[in-house]
Image (cartoon, rainbow, N blue to C red; front, side, top):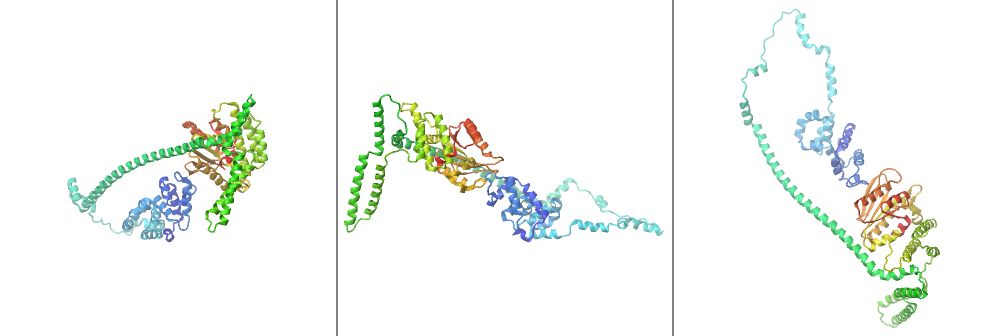
Length: 582
């Protein structure tokens, strides 16, 4: 390495540290990009300059600093700006002047950082020379009283010895000779200068530099014009790409909405009707007719017992024929075994359908929930019952499938309550629960945004995801955050117009994008609720822009929920959100 042979002294290291701290931010960032370790954990576009300077200085303390650190030092000192452009001969001739002008430490440090061995050796030799202070001390030793007044003593010696005085012979000084010489006129001086060889050489070099400058200026103008054209084209293509991506997402969302509404909806109507209670009809005949109509819709989808029994008898007969053919044939086809297995699976599933005599939930908790929900006929009462149920689900550690089925029963009862007060079948029930809001956005290809308070959500899910994702007394681990990010990413991949932001409390302000629709933020700042303020700022920004987006805020922080709902957001409990993404 360069500094292994001639290491820097403490004074030089202090100078390097000051030079790095005074270095322009843009030069420091561009030089540090050559070493990816320096950017670990920092923003790529706007890194923390103080943190970057500390990491560079830490690398400088190593016995052999890496080459990118040496490049940064050359840029920060005079090595790249001055020493690198001077030849060895120029440095030999002008080193005293450079030392007087810039000082020994800046010049010699820059020379030790140079890539040329001869320049580093020259700097080392200069460092080993006796300093001017030592020479000055030696001169002070010789500067005694007698030495200082030696000219006066020599003059008075003849007087003290009574020697007759002799006047000194007159001397013609060089300045007198110059004065006596005829002075040249200004025009003659200019002619002599113009006719001199150094002037002609300088003029020739100047003309060459002017020509080179004009050539570079022409090339620079051409490159600037080309760059402007390419930049304009890139901006146009970028805008076109953004428009195409937006159109692509909207088209996919509209395709999904069309498929759900026009292809799956007719099959779902019959089953959804079972969740709605019958309207209070005065005529028993009308109620009976309505029940028969709904049963016909249900039978259209699932079939009747007679039809299923007939299909089962045909399947068993066909299975027996296939087995006989396989046993009797001398060369049975390989497909016979596959078809026998497939038909046996079909017979088993058909028998299971015959044995299934009710669509009511089988779990005792869900049966009790269904009975209690049928007694509710008001949306507010349903919401209060939902909050009480969530506390029970967490306290009793219900499994995730049970939680999902419970929320499905709540959503069905919400539709039933709406149907009870709106008898017109053309009335489409509005979304009430967060799950219904998300489904409404999917059905109608509307944009939706999910804002998640990560460190408020994860502790609430501890009974569901397990204690292994948490540290004792320290909250969720990085694995818990990764699990949440993975689940939300899977949800955003299914919904083209769904945008999700996950916020975590952290002293470092940083963020990254998992996908185009999912961003992970670390709030920065101080305090226990740092992410709350950033979530509210994001909501306020959307309100200010006037975007028509369904916004769902996932948290159990009451203060945050109240402020978020005041900005038009919909509150979602952590448990319901986990049931949506799982």
